[in-house]
Amino acid sequence: MKLNKIDHVVIATNDLDDALRLWERNVGLAPDAGLDRPLGAGFKVARLPIGDAFLELVQPEDPGGRFARQVAERGEGLFSISVQVDGLDEAVGYLRGKGATVSDPEPSIWPGARVARVNAASAHGVSIQLIERS
Amino acid sequence: MIDKIHHIGIAVHDLDKSLEFYRDTLGLHVHAMDTVEDQGVRAALLTIGESEIELLEPTHPGANMAKFLERKGEGLHHICFQTADVDGELETLKAKEVELVDQKSRLGLAGMICFLHPKASRGVLVELATPLEIYEGPRP
Image (cartoon, rainbow over all chains, first blue to last red):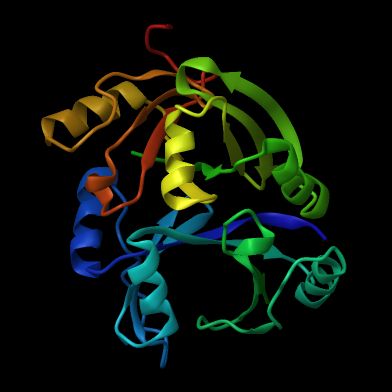
């Protein structure tokens, strides 16, 4: 298994508009204007390109949803990292063989990608998403 | 102006144990290991694409990293962006009255660095770094 690069970093926020204002003013990162809201995701999202990666700012909209509960529990801030792999199915099999807890591969909310999640307990507290882009 | 994600910092209780996952299982190459006494951390830097994963273990129980671990447990700690001119960025940030941890750049693992206060980005601890290879300001 080879991890090619950091694809994106997910940042949780309770106020997407304010977060976008601060990231642009204080860090100089602006959102990708052409981005549509992913379908049926239950959250608001903006993507801020940086180098060959991007930050994904995410605000939960469904208060009872899993994501909203996690944000309530952990607070705003860095939430997870997404790393790019070739051969997602093999990577998942390999990591499970090493004893990691990994979800089954599924389509990403973004077109043209499949993802699987490594449980934070397997990765020293970090939620790691593996992403395969076609 | 920032150019890329330089690294992502991860707080861990036991650096060697965390390397078993990040180095041995994920297969990431460790290109440096170092202890920064004044920051109270022992660190390993692992290459991933054009960026790095920085694993950070506190060197003693009173270290800031130890307090972070007590409060939040292991996990994502900060994100560092590379800029060609950390001092220039700091001046701009001060002029805008952005909340900062460091008023002056200092030597860190990534080069000359400074931290913004998490308030400046709604809860994310942001570091800016200019690697020493491209740093043109006064050397520490």
